[in-house]
Image (tube, rainbow, N blue to C red; front, side, top):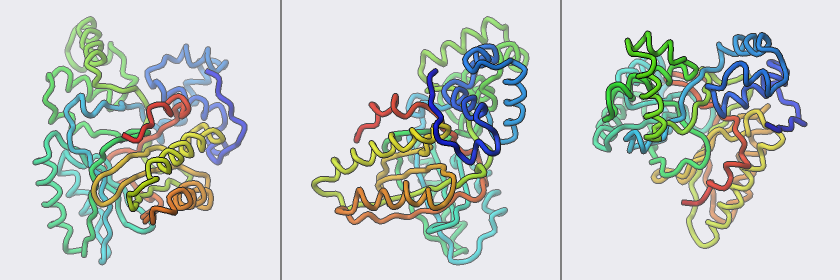
Length: 339
């Protein structure tokens, strides 16, 4: 793996350059062996273990699911703005009672909360959507929901509570939950936990891959890093020239990660249908850099389309885990199409 790290980041000051390289490799395959990591990074296995142990409070090993293949049909992103100060502990309890919300964070900016939700049927999603709006109406709620039509980059971690609802074989549900909780779980560990023969575990693991339930084994984070995590929703006037400007934006997203390879800046980019047309979430060293690359850049590219932007910085995770993406953006650029 040939990766250039010519530009230092605030992440390096806390973790170090070796850890940044390690995170990149684990993001692309979190099941990679200690031995292979040692060989590729040119350090001892003991050093790798020590670095991974140092990261374990912040970084978890998980699955990037192929959501359509496992039957998740209603992905939505929601912004919430309150007129009255909400009780976030109460909101967290409400969200925890359902398997539909996968990620909920507080945001400082144009809106107060961001939720990613998904369900196996649109009926389930609509029922949850309306009932939660009613429960939160006492806070003077402004609720804007958009369907995630196409994820161009990145992923959203899925909670095990939602895996329980999938219409797939029970043995595959159980295995996916173990891997989702810790993607580095060995066949021997799963054999003991699932009371299953080692060879049967290996057989079903390979079936999961053949069925394309899993896009990759990757990593996630339990809380925002010691950096600026900016989320942005945008709405445009769709007219002639929008597709060309959208291609310019995709190129900017791809290129903006080259000087900051740890995170590629953009954790998620997605086309939306509903209250907004587009969503992006990026990690930056500071607010000024985030505003320059994510907000001002978008305004400039879409200036002919009257871009309306709603943005803010992620403050606290109420439910679920945050995506952490450090893959080769240039390799993935070919699939970043306006479809």
